[in-house]
Length: 265
Image (cartoon, rainbow, N blue to C red; front, side, top):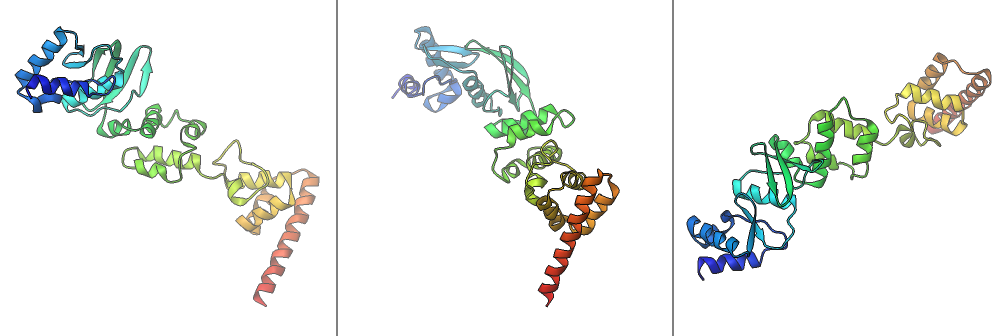
């Protein structure tokens, strides 16, 4: 087949909305021959130019991401698979190439030069989530924002991106999604609902303040009676609470001693 026939057939086989350049057809002939065929096809209305050096079949809707990917094939640069941010009518796409703005197919695409790590992140849906968190910055991120963005990820999934994200972001995500202490201890209520990173002494104090026997007992099993007693002595409680917790700790201590004695018998 002639160069023209090969290119026409290749274009006909392209999926809807595909973008292509002369670089995609160099196996069909010389660069000059390919350019000449594309020019003729454009003149007769078979294809349209969507940007400099980029074409699409006439009458087809082309999206900005396809334009970005087509440009990447043409230049050899790496780009994110989808826009990371949208500012009005401008779509921002990370790239390993030069930063520049391109008007194509009714879009304004702003290619923003980023490090290779960030471009790699932008190549997947979850990677773009991580890139958005990274861009927001350590000082501006909240635990709730991290949980909303990554809370439904499988355990350990963040490890797949460990080489691409900064250590502070990985640590923040792991801490934000770690099981709450109230869950690990088996407490009857979410004493740490407002602070998933609650300190042990603060959590113990909250549980003692409510003085539910089963929760106080679980504290003693988890932290040990001596630690719970130390926190109890350092904090001031209402007289009724103090009396109740004192009895509880005494009974729990006695029960644990008896259990230990039976185990050693």
